[in-house]
Image 1 (cartoon, rainbow, N blue to C red):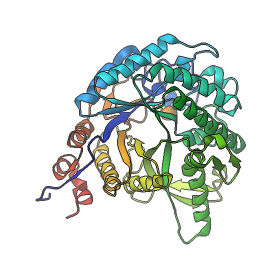
Image 2: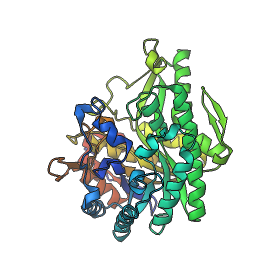
Image 3: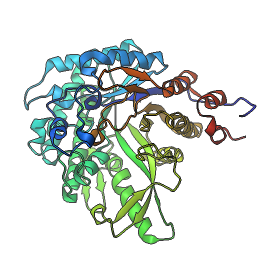
Image 4: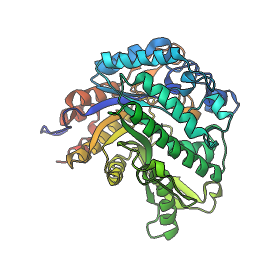
Length: 444
């Protein structure tokens, strides 16, 4: 308990929203590679399937958008499902475009500023069957989809994310093999990185051709990495490798036109200067050790510090200082930044209140130094299908009963609403929702 009042406030016009992805919330996406992946035994924990997901394609986006605006949010980030717009090569589905146009109009009518992601992990089956992002044609295919989509939706959106976490996509699909196509081949991983950078560059130029006033960027999965033993050179070396591949490769290429990794250096001149803002997705931070027993992971062992504040699944450690470090890292690109994802899996909703407050405080620290951070998007609005982890992890402010589609109001809804309405954090709200961290956020 503290006996004084203090507050941290954000600039007027700061964006407060939540982030979602099409396949995770829409339901019944049957023409993409994830639908097929879910049907293969052993791919998803417990054999879970996205199925109806949150039933947004059936119209329940309306009530969820209502929940967002009624609890103080002023923005929303969502994605467009490529396989709905182009279910077959050479065929466009105008009804699907109308459906997305209606959703964006729904955001507009509610006063929610949209950010639209054009690729969030899923690929149409026709594309996957022709090699997916391994194909040299992939950037051309993606560019055609982007042109069609932006031409259709530009009336309601001018802020676009071309690729969500392309670094995470490459690692999950081609290093760990837990995303389709489930390969573990570093040579293919590098090829896909290059093709995705080319695809981003094509999309960037297409969007600006179609919509002059557009703002276009990447959302990068940033992981704060520290050597487990600072005195041990191999630990520092593997941290350097991961920082170059995981954190830096995509945004550096979009700035300089150079894909620079320990495995390949490739000039992609069309990518020079293809970012108007940087999206930063931050969840947690790792210690990294060189470990000869981890040959399948290039002798790298990532783990959380001892006594870390862990989610019940152990998937995420609450390390708020990493958010500040993520934004400090982003400064080097000299661009406006948006926190496009941040959140924690917590079905009991016991960790999430302090996680949100502590991480938003770290965003405020960055803003207080006049760093160009323009918004914060919590992952996620409502529980959704979490890829290879299925329904075992719950990231939503609102809970979801998958069988009945009932939304369940968690305390975190109230936490985030208080932040959005205050445009900041106060001692009063921290004392109310997470008193155990009051001294960490408001030092006496």
